[in-house]
Image (cartoon, rainbow, N blue to C red; front, side):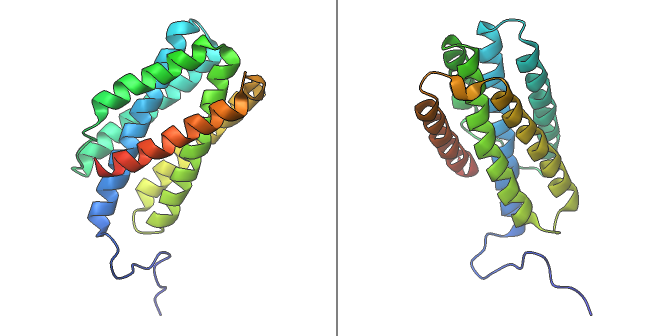
Length: 181
């Protein structure tokens, strides 16, 4: 007897191919935005080895999603110019508030992204094991960035709660937009 899929499809669900295109589009846009956030932070906090290391990982994530965009023939987000400017501005703006605020930005962004990746992993179930494995690895690295930010006094940033909630809201809105546009 065969096992039912770990995530049965329901009437009205988006076709799998369309779901995959949406996932890859939003993840590609998100990794591009993350790259730009770290570029903005490094423009202000020049030579920060911790931020540079996280930036390298985000660049590797983006390179993988560049490949997946082509492999799945998914279109990138039409809002890439917005993510280009907004990501850099968020990174530079938080860095101008100090290293702790830059780390608070990382914690806020990565908390939303790790939740987003976890939802995608659950949604994929066993339908696309390679994609699920890639997203799982990236989610784990994003959680590492989150924990790094906390270890570098993110919660000591000025107005941490307000800053964190504002960034999380922006990330959630960006995810919603990138899935669609």
